[in-house]
Amino acid sequence: MDENTEKILRKRLSDVDYQKLVKIDNPQLHQFIAKYLEICNPEKVFICNDSPEDQDYIRQAAVKNGEEIKLAMEGHTVHYDGYFDQARDKKRTRFLVPKEVDLGPNINAIDKDEGINEIHHIAKDIMQGHELYIRFFTLGPSNSTFSIPCVQLTDSSYVSHSEHLLYRPGYDEFIRQGKDARFFKFVHSEGELDERNTSKNIDKRRIYIDTEDGIVYSMNTQYGGNTIGLKKLAMRLAIHRASQEGWLTEHMFVMGVHGPNDRVSYFTGAFPSLCGKTSTSMIDGETIVGDDIAYLRKKEGKAYAVNVEKGMFGIIMGVNSKDDPMIWKRLQEPKEIIFSNVLLKEDKTVHWIDKDGEIPEKGKNHSGDWFKGKKDDDGNEITPSHRNARFTISLDTLDNIDPKIDVPEGCLVSGIIYGGRDSDTWAPVVQSFDWTHGITNKASSLESETTAATLGQEGVRKFNLMSNIDFISIPLGRYIQNNLDFGNSLENPPLIFSVNYFIKDKNNNFLNEKVDKYVWLKWMELRAHNEVDAIKTPIGYIPKYEDLRILFKEVLNKDYTKEAYDGQFMIRIPELLSKIERIDNVYKTKVPDTPEILFKNLAEERERLNKAKNEFGEYVTPDKW
Ligand code: SPV
Ligand code: MN
Image (cartoon, rainbow, N blue to C red; front, side, top):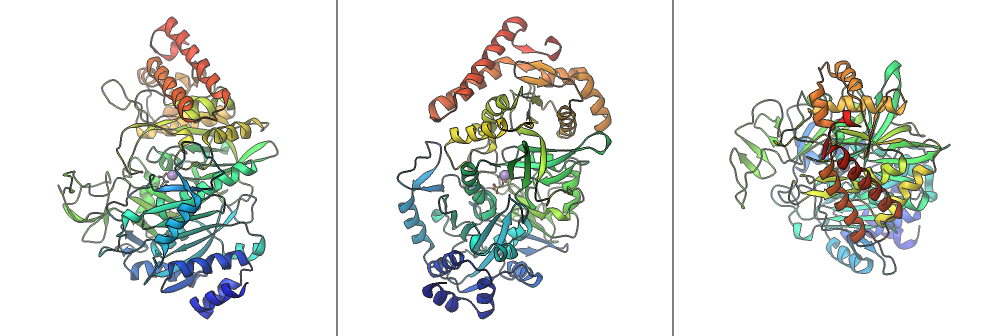
């Protein structure tokens, strides 16, 4: 350690904490910590070595300093983010890019020198009067080719506590790797707080990402998607690293789908926020590996995936005993949960949108004291809980956790699913012709109607390739090419499917029930083993009625009618053609490095659809193919 670093650390850390830190033999880590202690100037510092006492220290700090409130049930707490700090801030999340690098027009970038100056200016003394918590984690299972060590500096005990639930401990891994550790670094401050313990200086909210140096700065915000460094902030760093090293970082769940004779096949699935990703990974009868972020690597010609995390930061709106029985059950148990931005009742229980039971008359929520009919300054009704309200849990407290969650080599991937919120175009489940068609015409053509997970208007159809558009840190064309190359280098690439749980009829009624996804999964699992046939259409393979009828009966004990099938799996040619135009236009006008094959595959699909239109008309039921 250099002299200056040692001087700073000795001055700012207690003896005990100093000893904890220097047990890790990594001068780069020591320098980094010393630098931000000087800039942010916290009143106190706590270094967590993952011992049960240290874990408990942070848990208790969150309650002591009011960032979390204890609920009636053991282990449950509630946390609030500010009224205007309820989702990811896309506008003020920017990449710090050196002058000589061009990330293309789709990436929110700022000149690196300018951005670093600005963020250091904002960070100056920002932790004054606060305690700083320093904690070590690994992304991916420990001791595996997948794992990436991380260090998080935060003055929010809520953020630190959340990370404890969401990520694997890393202090020992840092000691083991010593000087060799290639780690990611995160500096977060909630900044000055108001009387409700929420960030006051939202105008100075900034999330700046430096992929070159592997550092993310997050200032004046509390919402998890902006602050929990190892989640979407690390994901952007990992996409960059993966691109250099030939593997993939994806916005995907990983789950075990249980087929006949105790067979378990692993699927990954990419869905934009609030489109059923967590809910799919938590389907009753299947097993969960992860619900949000996956790393995929190639081994012996096959694709393997791991869950980057070990917990869940899930959307709570709509969780009830019918639609999400597994999550519902877990939320009733006296095990650790942090609820965020839900309604707190006087009896210290919580309520959220579409929970079982009555909506309470009053309580406390993200807007302060709440009562039925309360409106905000713009006259909009304030919902009892925020639509992006969440729960945070550790997966090891679930009954349906998959036994392979921590296996260092990951799970062999049989299929990859891309899904969005789409009211009028895509059928409920379609298999692509092959890997390339799947990446170009499904994954790269994904659109979704916007939701409450990011700031801005809801319900607008947005292009969202691989549901990863918010997190891609390299030029989009290169990202698509990496995906094409990854699958095409495998001897046995996973099958690629699209799903859509949100298709409606002309009268705006959903054509499916939420639980129908149970069946789509079983069908995909059988396809992965060539055990059911399918119908070839211009957009890919769709299920046969007879197979679905059997599965609906087996899985849901439901009589599936031919009429329902025809409505759901009708090929909607005008909408599909418009979609191709939109996607083609996005790539032509906005993505200069689009791989040629994408245009070719879109053009071929347009041709197939036009031909079918001439033959069968605009809306084609499955029996025609
Ligand atoms: C998402 O919005 O995709 C999430 C939550 O998983 S966040 O951390 O905000 O990204
Ligand atoms: Mn997500």
